Image (cartoon, rainbow, N blue to C red; front, side):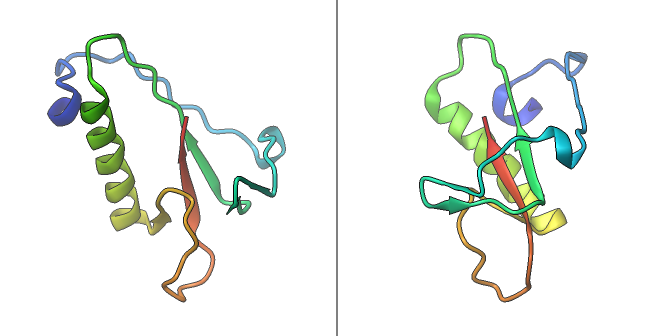
Length: 92
């Protein structure tokens, strides 16, 4: 957030919430994307002032970092690695 969105270092307006699987209402698939029980949803609310390219770069960095560090599938695309079930990342 500091690098891509230029959020001030002391900005602590972040809310992280974990939900039980039973609290997540989701379809098995939607628009050709199948979701597993390992679905992760990240919802980000930004104030006006950041253009679409900046937001896309930030989302891409988050997806890349989570994929690299935790083996989370990016963008809802099918896993072609043969490593088995992966967690999925969806941005809202």
